[in-house]
Length: 239
Length: 239
DNA sequence: ATGCGGACTTGAACATGTTCAAGAAGCTGC
DNA sequence: GCAGCTTCTTGAACATGTTCAAGTCCGCAT
Image (tube, rainbow over all chains, first blue to last red; front, side, top):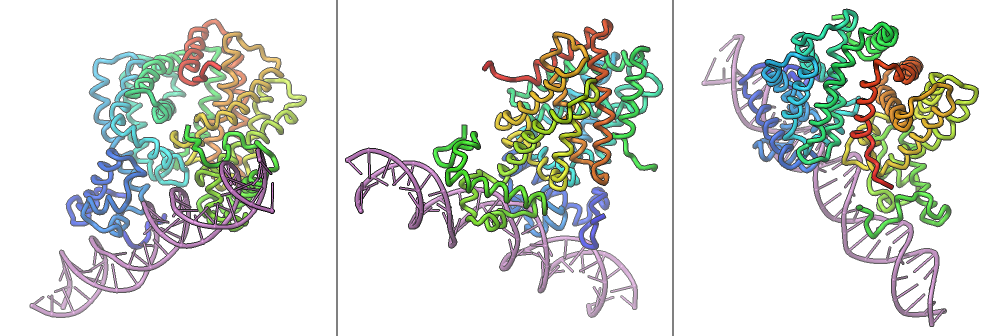
């Protein structure tokens, strides 16, 4: 939409992997993420990032529309690593509960080092008008990658899933993860242990809910819930 | 905690209703909220607020630690009006579903005019380190007022509530409201009609869940869910 | 090689949230 | 009324995200 005439193609970060510009871009974002992790988001000024990366302030803005946009790198990196790490952790896990737990804990492990600045990160992500919101279109790629991961979580398990729920379930498990992430962001316990405990305790609950959803008495409820999710959550345009 | 030596008592906004300072404070926040509603949060500069309110910039900072803190006024005002408006709308409503719906719609009505800047508001509220977060201690008063309101919603209905759930239910309904609010913040439909529809459709679902929670098959699930909420959500210190 | 067009880079200038040292105004006990 | 204390007010100075007009560099067609 606002991909104005100037500036490199921002939607495809891996355009020409080693053109001069691409290297500069990489250097800037690497520096930025390092500094964010080290001193926090707010304490890291654009001037400092530029200086450390050996470019001018204006140059940083040539590649990233705003300071917020630098954060998108974090989100992207995190979901990629999540997608890499989870399958390993899923091996040998057969029950749905175990698998959900594994996926959640994998996320917490990956995000752990960034907890210190997660709050500031999250503040920006929560602004719907920001391209960083997990619900925004710009984050679609990262989000879809993460949702697909939960499809794997489901498919490998022995739990039978009602047909009509099958295709909204990954999205719901992703939502479950978002809730855990939300809690994590607010979690002040040492090492964010409480978040891990939350993951360990909600995972079997979620699995049980899935299993129970087949009960006859619950059918109407489940049906309505399913329609609700379909109407309000899944707003993918027809490809 | 950070209530430093200088500055007026910020925790009790209604200290001395008509002292000079209190009037100035009031003038500033009224002006600010008006301007926020009119041109949005980011577009409203502290300088503009100060000018419009007829004070200096520094003076605004004497009463409000930061621009963000001006928003707390919004949250506070909203919950107060919510508490005022809802009882009227509850009159004559007997089913739990109707009552939940009424409470939700009341909130949406009140917040409606501020939707334009709700995103920016929300961004700040989502930062856990910000005193504005609905989960933060500073917002406790407003939040508790809102939770208490859901107690009323419950008490007036004919639905029987399992004993052990009775005292966590208001908190859960408040959470339900938070979800609707979250959706509302992201809602781009004209007049935020979709949010209202969401309220209308989730209200009966919530009510039904409450009713079904008495089923024997669901007892263990409900029990665990209840403990979960108790352990992770309700962190009130012993009075 | 030369020149041209676009990709890339610069840093000063700007806008705006925030701080602070200084002062004005109001109050209280004498 | 006055001294002294607190509350309140000021506006200039500062920090930092962002913009922009002007350059520099690079690859390619001629």
